[in-house]
Image 1 (tube, helix red, strand yellow):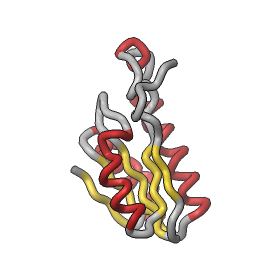
Image 2 (cartoon, one colour):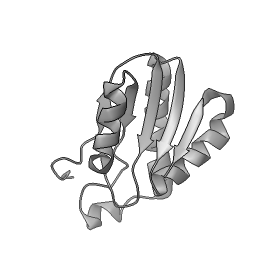
Image 3 (cartoon, helix red, strand yellow):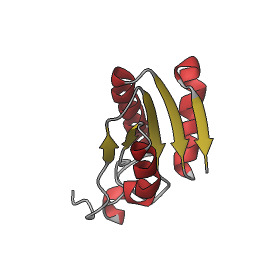
Image 4 (cartoon, one colour):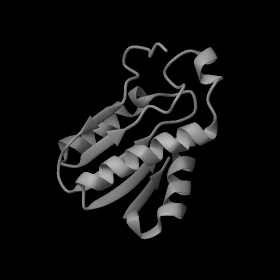
Length: 116
């Protein structure tokens, strides 16, 4: 698998408040990089995973399913949970849908939600 340069996941450790940012369908972490950097510069711990198949080729993406994308978001959530006291979910388009579903399933483990 070949990831398009710039489409790699982004993360930065900061304070005890974590943010999981999820990009949109056919997008990549690159599309959320300015938002993620703004939040990280404000002292938050930020994670922007690359959803499987995204930021690659259409052939690679065609081999992935929505369950794969959600599983990657859940994995990133658990990593954030291990190093922060609270987590906010934020997402763009499909990423917003993932954030909404995760908030529904995780309940009190989610401190807030922002969808665009």
